[in-house]
Amino acid sequence: MARRRPEPVQVIKQRRDAALNALVHGVPYINFLGIEFDRRGDELTAILPYDDKLIGNPLIPAIHGGAISGFLEVAAVIGLSWATLWDEIERGEMDADEIIKGHLPRLPKTIDFTVDYLRSGLPRDAYARAKVNRSGRRYASVHVEAWQDNRQRAFAQATGHFLMPRREV
Amino acid sequence: MDKAKIAKQFIAAIPHSRALGMELTEIGQGFAVIEMPYAEHLVGDPVTGVVHGGAVSALMDTCCGAAAMSHPSSPAGTATIDLRIDYMRPATPGQTIVTRAECYNITRSVAFVRATAVDDDADNPVAMATGAFTVER
Image (cartoon, rainbow over all chains, first blue to last red):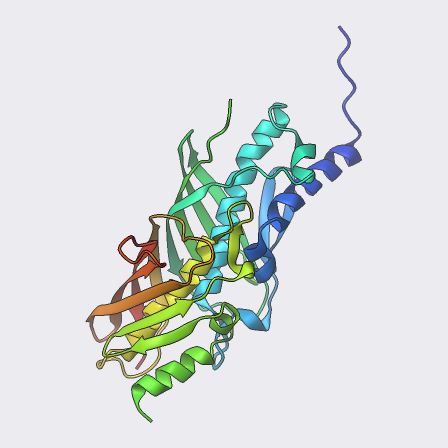
């Protein structure tokens, strides 16, 4: 039996990016903070471009702790959601075109979220990467790290637990 | 100028808190109440219109910080060391979220704070938080 010829790389990439884009930009709060995601294969990096409205202490100046935790939580939720969607799309259980058309999958719900503020957030762009430590049928545990100029010097980290959305089978 | 007035103006001077529409309605000796009216840009779930957890965290963080600063043993500013938030239920879309924070213990270097967030159904908290804040000297 002849194997089906794989789709051209550009078609696959375009579809994956469009699905991620629809997922991220469907959320008003993410757009308000101005968060973007950089995708390399299944790995995501969240980017928080600096903006004056993120400032918490105008004297230092430093990014607001709330903006940092919001950024970390967005990175965790999207990272977790994307990790599960990626598998579903790859297995053919989920149609990426449906997401692009605006049929957005339900997002995981935060049960609890704990943030460590390691250094003050400077008025620059910030980056974050989420690691899904455990993802079960109902619960997931995710760790996130955020940094600015230097990847080795995280300025905040967080761990959160999430309730996974029910999937109709 | 009294401390309450300073704190109120300080909150108003925080760009991020202003961008989220927060308003400090009460401040005392180690406690603070801050409200955040419902707004479109705070939404985290476009299907249900529920406010994003991140916006609730920002509200909790600001309120806990204000409570830490307003404590009689706190000479000046503060910064968050850590903050844990438990989300008990989604806030009802359209309703203002009100957070009350209390600094229940303070040492020379650390202020311990807890907070509760509610919407119109005040007997059923939306979220609760506990955190540690620095005491700046």
